[in-house]
Length: 373
Image (cartoon, rainbow, N blue to C red; front, side, top):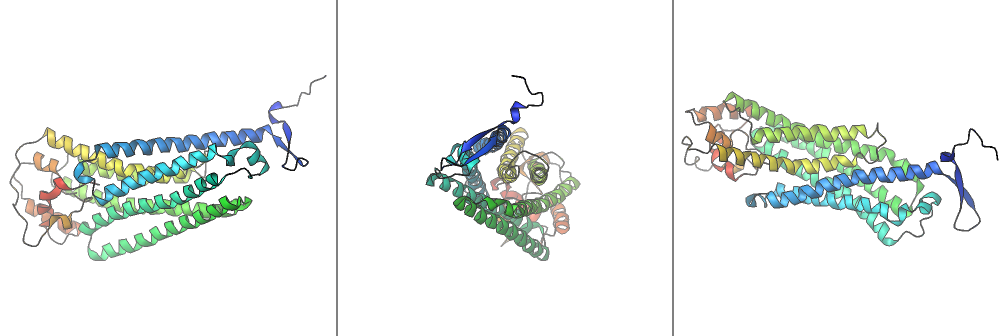
C-alpha cells in the first residue's frame, strides 16, 4: 500500500461508544495527550506545595520555642499550614479518583463516580475558604499589633477600616466561588466557564488583600529600621529578617498571581496562599534563630536600664509580639557604650506616633519573652 506523505500518526483519532452501546464519537490522540499533560503538570504543582507545607509544619512543631507555642499567631500559622496540607492532598487525590478516568472525562459519563469522590472535591473547595480566612486572620493580627503601638489612633482607625473592607471583599468573592464550585461538582455542569470572571475576581482580591497588609507591615518596619540606624543600631538582626520576609511575602505571591494569566502551567494561583502560609512562620523561625545566635555570640554585661517602668505602664500593652522593633536583645548586648536612651526613645516615639517616649525604653525589659512574629 502506498504511504500518504501528509499523514500524521500523532493526530489520528479513534472511535468510542457511549453508554447505550450504539452512539459513537471520535477522540483524537492529541486530546488524550492534552489531558495527560494537564494532569501531570498540575499534580507536580500541587505536590511541590504539599511537600513544602508539610516540611515546614514539621519543622515548626519541632523547633518552635516552648514559650511561643501558645501565642495566637503561632497557633494561626500552625492551623494555616495544616489546612494547606489537607487542601493540597485532596486536590492531588482528585487525579486518582473516578472523575479523571479516561472514558468518564472523554464521554462526560460520571455514573461511576462515588460519593467519596464528590465529598473529596467538596471538602477541597471548602478548604480554600478556610485557608484564606486563616491567612487573613494571621495578617490582621500582625498588622493590628504593629499599628496599635506605632500609629496614632486616627490613622489606626483608618487603616483598620480599609483593611476590613479589603478582607471582606476577598472573603466574599472566595466564598461565592466556593459555592459555584460545589454546585458544579454536584451537578457536573459544563457551565463552569461562565464563572471564570468570579475565579479571576477572587484571585485579584485575595492578592490585593495580601499586598495591602504586607505594604503596611513593610512600611512600618522600614521606618523602625531607619530610626534604629539613626540611633547607631546598624547590625543585621531580627527586625531586618522580618523586613526581608515581609518584602518577599509582598512581591512573590503577587508575581504568581499575575503570571497565571500568561502561562500554560495550570493552577498557578493556588501558589499564592501556599507562599503566604509558608512565609509567615518561616520568618518567625529565621528571626528567632538570628536573635539566639547574636545573643550567644556577643553575650556580655549590658549597660544598666531602668529597673521598673512608671506606675500603671505595661510594656506588653505597647510592644506586642510583632512589634519589638526599636531594640532587641542583640542591641542590648552589642551597644554598651553610654547613650541617653531616654532621649532616643522620646525622639523615636515622637516620629512614629507613640504616645510617650518612655515606651521605647521600658519595653526593653520584656523583649526576650516576646514572639518576633
